[in-house]
Length: 117
Image (cartoon, rainbow, N blue to C red; front, side):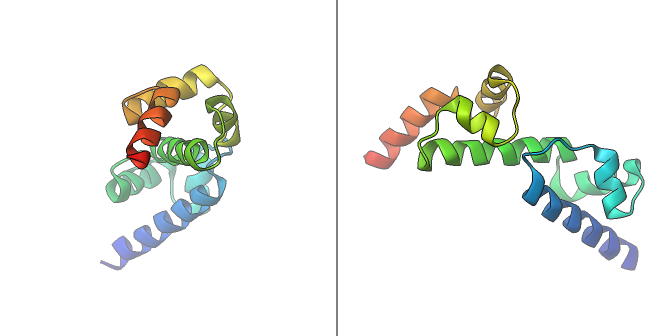
Protein backbone atom coordinates (compact mmCIF):
# COMPACT_ATOMS: atom_id res chain seq x y z
CA UNK A 1 0.00 0.00 0.00
CA UNK A 2 2.83 2.43 0.79
CA UNK A 3 4.21 1.82 -2.70
CA UNK A 4 0.87 2.80 -4.26
CA UNK A 5 0.78 5.99 -2.17
CA UNK A 6 4.32 6.82 -3.22
CA UNK A 7 3.53 6.25 -6.88
CA UNK A 8 0.39 8.37 -6.57
CA UNK A 9 2.43 11.15 -5.04
CA UNK A 10 5.09 10.85 -7.76
CA UNK A 11 2.46 11.00 -10.51
CA UNK A 12 0.68 13.90 -8.78
CA UNK A 13 3.97 15.84 -8.79
CA UNK A 14 4.39 15.12 -12.49
CA UNK A 15 0.82 16.28 -13.15
CA UNK A 16 1.51 19.51 -11.25
CA UNK A 17 4.62 20.03 -13.35
CA UNK A 18 2.61 19.37 -16.52
CA UNK A 19 -0.02 21.91 -15.47
CA UNK A 20 2.68 24.56 -15.18
CA UNK A 21 4.49 23.55 -18.39
CA UNK A 22 1.85 22.08 -20.72
CA UNK A 23 2.69 24.61 -23.43
CA UNK A 24 6.26 23.30 -23.71
CA UNK A 25 7.40 20.19 -25.56
CA UNK A 26 7.79 17.26 -23.19
CA UNK A 27 9.55 13.95 -23.28
CA UNK A 28 7.96 11.20 -21.23
CA UNK A 29 11.45 10.06 -20.24
CA UNK A 30 12.10 13.47 -18.66
CA UNK A 31 8.78 13.41 -16.80
CA UNK A 32 9.51 9.89 -15.58
CA UNK A 33 12.90 11.04 -14.36
CA UNK A 34 11.33 14.00 -12.52
CA UNK A 35 8.96 11.54 -10.86
CA UNK A 36 11.78 9.16 -9.97
CA UNK A 37 10.35 6.29 -12.00
CA UNK A 38 11.41 4.32 -15.05
CA UNK A 39 9.62 5.34 -18.25
CA UNK A 40 7.51 2.18 -18.33
CA UNK A 41 6.56 2.37 -14.64
CA UNK A 42 5.76 6.06 -15.00
CA UNK A 43 3.59 5.43 -18.05
CA UNK A 44 1.70 2.60 -16.33
CA UNK A 45 1.08 4.54 -13.09
CA UNK A 46 0.17 7.73 -14.99
CA UNK A 47 -2.38 5.86 -17.09
CA UNK A 48 -3.77 4.12 -14.00
CA UNK A 49 -4.35 7.50 -12.31
CA UNK A 50 -5.59 9.52 -15.28
CA UNK A 51 -6.87 6.96 -17.83
CA UNK A 52 -4.60 8.75 -20.35
CA UNK A 53 -1.01 8.68 -21.43
CA UNK A 54 1.11 11.67 -20.37
CA UNK A 55 1.03 13.03 -23.93
CA UNK A 56 -2.76 12.62 -24.16
CA UNK A 57 -3.05 14.44 -20.83
CA UNK A 58 -0.87 17.29 -22.12
CA UNK A 59 -2.88 17.49 -25.34
CA UNK A 60 -6.15 17.68 -23.41
CA UNK A 61 -4.76 20.46 -21.20
CA UNK A 62 -3.53 22.39 -24.24
CA UNK A 63 -6.85 22.09 -26.06
CA UNK A 64 -8.91 23.07 -23.02
CA UNK A 65 -6.71 26.12 -22.43
CA UNK A 66 -6.90 27.10 -26.11
CA UNK A 67 -10.69 26.83 -25.96
CA UNK A 68 -10.73 29.04 -22.87
CA UNK A 69 -8.46 31.61 -24.56
CA UNK A 70 -10.63 31.73 -27.67
CA UNK A 71 -13.83 32.08 -25.68
CA UNK A 72 -12.79 34.41 -22.85
CA UNK A 73 -9.86 36.31 -24.41
CA UNK A 74 -11.31 36.30 -27.94
CA UNK A 75 -8.10 34.95 -29.50
CA UNK A 76 -8.43 33.46 -32.96
CA UNK A 77 -7.69 29.76 -33.36
CA UNK A 78 -4.15 30.23 -34.71
CA UNK A 79 -3.15 32.59 -31.90
CA UNK A 80 -4.63 30.28 -29.27
CA UNK A 81 -2.89 27.28 -30.85
CA UNK A 82 0.52 28.97 -30.70
CA UNK A 83 -0.16 30.28 -27.19
CA UNK A 84 -0.64 26.75 -25.85
CA UNK A 85 2.33 25.25 -27.67
CA UNK A 86 1.06 24.03 -31.03
CA UNK A 87 3.35 24.69 -33.98
CA UNK A 88 0.84 23.67 -36.64
CA UNK A 89 -2.59 25.33 -36.86
CA UNK A 90 -3.88 22.44 -38.99
CA UNK A 91 -2.82 19.86 -36.40
CA UNK A 92 -4.43 22.00 -33.70
CA UNK A 93 -7.67 22.22 -35.67
CA UNK A 94 -7.75 18.44 -36.25
CA UNK A 95 -7.12 17.62 -32.60
CA UNK A 96 -9.55 20.32 -31.43
CA UNK A 97 -12.30 18.94 -33.67
CA UNK A 98 -11.62 15.42 -32.42
CA UNK A 99 -11.96 16.48 -28.77
CA UNK A 100 -14.79 19.02 -28.99
CA UNK A 101 -16.72 17.67 -31.98
CA UNK A 102 -16.39 20.78 -34.16
CA UNK A 103 -13.61 22.92 -35.62
CA UNK A 104 -12.56 25.89 -33.46
CA UNK A 105 -14.50 28.58 -35.36
CA UNK A 106 -17.75 26.60 -35.34
CA UNK A 107 -17.26 25.59 -31.70
CA UNK A 108 -16.81 29.25 -30.68
CA UNK A 109 -19.94 30.20 -32.61
CA UNK A 110 -21.89 27.41 -30.87
CA UNK A 111 -20.53 28.37 -27.44
CA UNK A 112 -21.42 32.04 -28.04
CA UNK A 113 -24.98 31.10 -28.97
CA UNK A 114 -25.36 28.89 -25.91
CA UNK A 115 -24.02 31.54 -23.53
CA UNK A 116 -26.15 34.29 -25.13
CA UNK A 117 -29.38 32.39 -25.06
